[in-house]
Image (tube, one colour):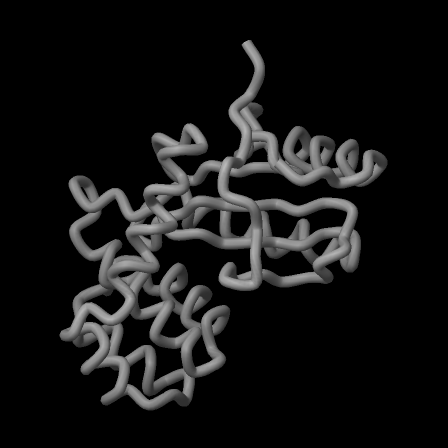
Length: 183
């Protein structure tokens, strides 16, 4: 059975690290309260360092609100930080502090990374980024995402064992020899 394809193409609306013309684009659908996403986080950082400009990494929200009651607001706080140019700083601090994701914690992290924490507080209360997070989630569902983390390599879902760093790295390396194609 063929792997699922990423049905929502990567655009400037996405949060990405690495050059847009990198031969490999890795998209993660993740949840800031998911322990598996937390485990994948340092692996992804290592792969980014190893592959350098050959990898573009994109993070999309897939909060599993039933199992992780803080995940949606954590995702919205990352979007609020992104609006102030600090998405990746908030992304990292949320994974580092996964056991403390109450709204008060999110506001404290905003202050810690040097953004307007009062604005973040107001935006969380107003649901300013609810739609963006919901759109990411719905795009994930359309693309066959049903758990976190789910990865797509050049538009094709990686169905291997992401927790096996060698297997995951081999899939990224194999993809770097093939021109990236739009889904």
